[in-house]
Image (cartoon, rainbow, N blue to C red):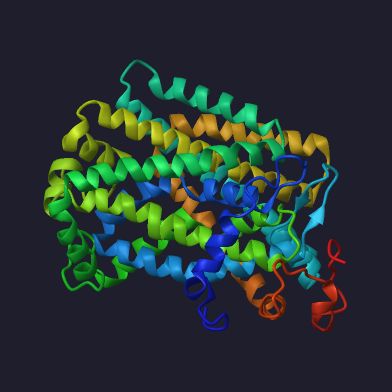
Length: 451
């Protein structure tokens, strides 16, 4: 963030314009457009972490965890820029005619390390194709089961989620891109309106919510697990689970876009990190915290439990605020859509990485079946088990990926300098040439998709 001179924050007007431009670019092309890649990325980010994850952070870490979610999102926006720009720079066109990239690609083509690349590709498939897909599906099924009570309801919802995922997944990456570009903006807008209605209904509690966030952020008032270390850790874990900055997942999506300069997609995805946490997660946080004191929220809406929080907390608040029995149903519908758009985003990442390891139809078919099976099976097991699995692989993935990003950071800073130089010269849409970074190559560095 320091090296970029605060770009993700201080130039947010520029990143916003890039993110929302080109909404029609991909309609008549088989390639994934910059806007479509942004929507896939935002669809992957905006998932159950924005509802259940925020509830968990507040219940276990206290209201101060929200502050640390904000801080880590701001830092993470720089991480997201770095990994997404690298992904664009070292992308590769595969047999399906689409670009594919991500940590595995920039580890091999940038660092020249096939073993590290294979490790990163494997971690992506396991972390997101199994861990994140499982968490999204099980939380969605749990919320639906709470809203619609009938025999074997989780099993039935698991089947529905798996079938719906199969229809989109077997349509390929371009179908996923078209689906995401249509549903994600609408989904986010409706969620904002829904949250705004609840917050307005509890408008007198908003000031108190802000006070709780900042009072508890530094462990000044210890509540729940709210000592400073615990508050920060919950903000980090649930924040990164939500916006995925530095985990390599969004880098996989960023690399699919057809753009003229790698920095463009890097800036777009850095903006997506901020939207996910500073906007979407914040709306959920204020829905929860404006409904009463921390003790009141825990006792009345979370059944007196302080060691676990999920979408049921938000469902109970919606029910009590103004929606009655319709509240849990509406929240469960949001959970379903959020989980589903995230699930197909995670499949996109898994396919990209399995193509890196073995670009063969039978292998790709196997991954599709694996993701669909995980989506189903995770719906009938405990959410706690899936979250433990997911957190474990998430930590490993982030640690290995950020080492690779650090080692290749000089390429990103050079590309960003080139972008700024062209912009300062009045170039409307800068164009990247690999000669710009030629002197940074080592004997194993390869950039193939840029002239």
